[in-house]
Amino acid sequence: MIPEFPLALSSEQIAAELVEMSRRAADGVRALSQVRTEDVLVGITPKTAVYHDDLVTLYRYTPRVAAPMQPPVLITYALVNRPYMIDLQEDRSLVRGLLDLGLDVYLIDWGYPQRNDRWLSLDDYINGYMNDCVDYLRQSLKIEQINLIGICQGGTFSLCYTALNPHKIANLITMVAPVDCHVADGLLNLWMGASGSMPTIQPEKMVEALGNIPGDVMNFGFLMLKPFELGLQKYLSLLDTLDDTAHSTNFLRMEKWIFDSPDQAGAAWAEFVRHFYIENGLIMGQITIGGQRVDLQQITMPVLNVYAEKDHLVPPKSSQALARAVTSTDYTEVSFPVGHIGMYVSARVQQQLPQAIADWLKARN
Image (tube, rainbow, N blue to C red; front, side, top):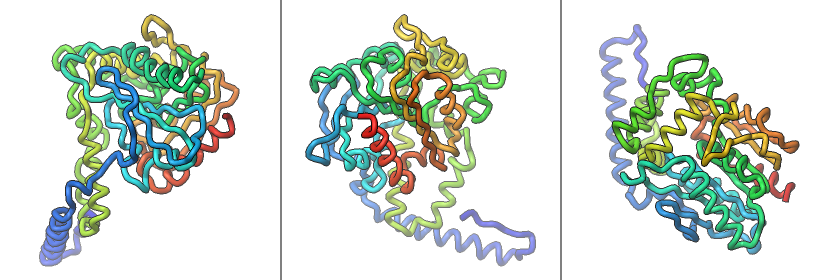
């Protein structure tokens, strides 16, 4: 809790409040010092690497039922953060929830781009790495189609991939995925040119100057979307719960994920910012990848679109725009009253979301 000092308080009362806050901070530091590094575990569900392609690894999570449902689900996450957010801790893990409900779950880990990866393009990621992972599953499991789950930027990648390869995808699930990047809601959209505003960045110039885009630069930009809430308030609020070791451990898990931000391959980042955000090309049907136009009307298979009602990064209207872009006659929307990160870490959401996904898939398999 941030201390409040009404005008009626005397200087002695204000001093007492500050002393109390200092005491809580000292207690909190002692509690944090008792949290061992080995206790701050992330990505806790066992998994096995089954395929490698340069910096990209395809993992299979160890099934938790004797005969997992087929076809399997392949999860593709954003490039900007590490995918263990969906498996952050045992009792708040989308992955664990899906496994417990009988699904066979695979994950694409994009890795950490190095300096020589500066020229990787969206074509390399979508028609290269992503397609290779899909084809590995199809060939190794002797199946024609898989189920695809795309999260955040990975959801946008999944839309592109499915539109270009509809014969390989049985069912498509998108989560908090930006589709219309010029909806008026959301500061990020306004920065990128929504509502006729001038874009605040020139992505090509940034890549020319920096090569790969450092993860710290991306983190700073996200913090500036809510500078007080994300940069100060959360640490002040932490004072009220620092004496709770379990809460402190969970807080450190989140901090570990937030600041574990890979650099972004320069060419792919510039393409994504320019064509998807500044030009809003996905919803306009103007995106071309590997010489092929991404036409969302090619998405005719069942689609489940999940969005967060309080999302400040991907406003609900941005995700909901998918309904008018695809031609699927089996389109479903599910929303939760949380923010972007709450979709992964909210205890209530993790009680409901895996079940919603599993029920939807089982009804169509």
